[in-house]
Length: 319
Ligand SMILES: NC(=O)c1ccc[n+]([C@@H]2O[C@H](COP(=O)([O-])OP(=O)(O)OC[C@H]3O[C@@H](n4cnc5c(N)ncnc54)[C@H](OP(=O)(O)O)[C@@H]3O)[C@@H](O)[C@H]2O)c1
Image (cartoon, rainbow, N blue to C red):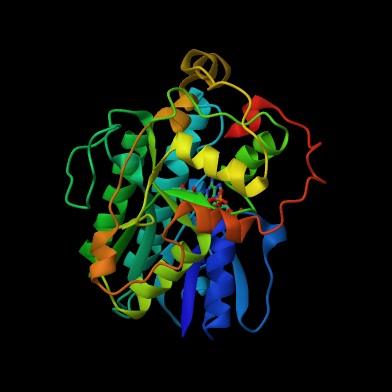
């Protein structure tokens, strides 16, 4: 069976691609970088430029499932230009695929499984969010995710099945937010952000990749939260990381105003709080390999060496 992935060359996409290949699937992928195109028997890249609605239609050959992960990183200064890029890279990617499918004459039906984000849920220390929540966060992130999901829903008009994973903070040693936090802790510069009481609903990268596969193989549709069963506060996350890395936390919390001064509006990424439930996917039979942050971090940083503690540290690198 062949799966088409957008954003396959990124953090989540690489982990998912490895899992799919291991499970015997073939992968077609769309990339915006011609130099990332590879062509092997099981792994074939195709060029696209969603900003111009350009797509190589050969990518759909033999494909029945499309997994959508494409999007410019949100961890860049939220200037007007970057905000436009963050939003458009997501909506236009889906619009480009939509337009290609709608031109097909053979009545093929696809299943779309798309990444979304828990940033859609309102910032709250008290709420516990399930997929039934309808309120949307009044922030740039809320706006992006709402527009992104609206594009996903449109695929139903093409009789496609649609599944959505509202992903939390992806824990990986290879990219995303965690390695930056790790560098800070290793350099004795780790500290919670703001009050540290904000909830971080995280997921181990292996579990997230397994969740995409699970939705595909079980033919599940609808919205699912892509978070582990036990969200933690930012303070707990930093404390657990320090334990795993065998470092003391000697600094006080990084004050909210310093983060706002340094990172501008993007500091929201570090300060917003979303406590999110994964019970819906668990009820469908999905088993998490990593339910607790402690075990997840231990698996990512198995040796507590002090050899790389002299890495350059810049607070702007936190996100
Ligand atoms: N990592 C997290 O903690 C997290 C949390 C919540 C949601 N998510 C979402 O999950 C998805 C995958 O996350 P990730 O961490 O794997 O992201 P990533 O490492 O930044 O990879 C995203 C991929 O999207 C493609 N891309 C970048 N800019 C693009 C543009 N302007 N137009 C079209 N494609 C573009 C790139 O692939 P090519 O260079 O091959 O085109 C890139 O490899 C993203 O949409 C992200 O928002 C991630």
